[in-house]
Image (spheres, rainbow, N blue to C red):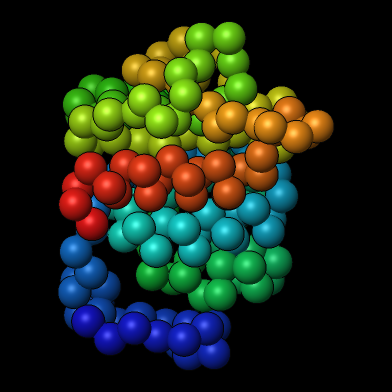
Length: 176
């Protein structure tokens, strides 16, 4: 498979053959009301980097086509399978029905350290609103809630950054 630079990705649409060449990992990304378009674009880049099965944009979020998402996604929104949903809970229920393990990333009293995460596949990584976090109804349906340790004065990490840490932790178990 040919790797493309940002200049090519920003200005070219993939062919069906190119999309079929990508071996997808059994990982989904679910964005529960993520509002910042730069975070959404960065999550598209992450989904491409880990060859995620699909990315779901849920809630009042902006979605492609969007010049701001395109700018931070560097065109990867054309390469990543994605869908829009009114509510994350709807996506979570559908994924659970298909046997997908739900991993929410959230600072929460019920959270486990990401270091103890031992994922089963397929799995979904859920990240939430930049201020409000993952919705309570999604947290209730999660198989596990994981958090990153915060050693400084800030009590939370950026949405795409925390998703990236968890995604690569999960990829380690696939031997990738």
